[in-house]
Length: 117
View 1 (tube, helix red, strand yellow):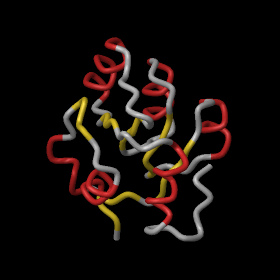
View 2 (cartoon, one colour; view 1 turned 90 degrees about the horizontal axis):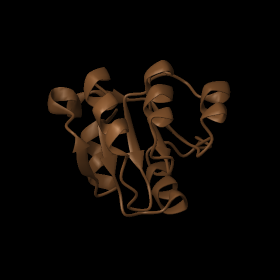
View 3 (cartoon, rainbow, N blue to C red; view 1 turned 45 degrees about the vertical axis):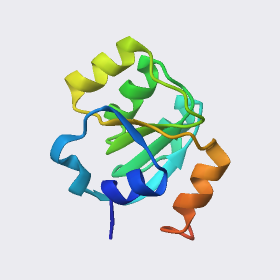
View 4 (spheres, rainbow, N blue to C red; view 1 turned 30 degrees about the vertical axis):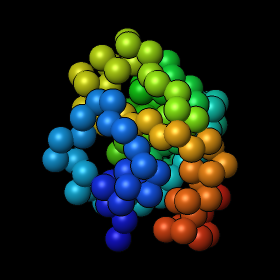
């Protein structure tokens, strides 16, 4: 079982929108994409979204697709309106300094068969 706290540690994440007591929730997979249409077309609920898209669209998509959290890669920070929306919707947001490929490689250790999107 992989917890959100495990992913936060593995990716050395900084919390942007607090996850509160959600660090103990189980994460079923990860999905990596910059295009939110790909997320909606191919993702599964219960995952963590890795993206470089820092707009409200990423938060809306994560909420609609029932993602557990969003991790912004490459040190990118969410736009202020995206962070506000995440707070309202209860979507934890994190930032990692790792780029998309490195972040996916690190998470692949938990799910060797996952494609990451």
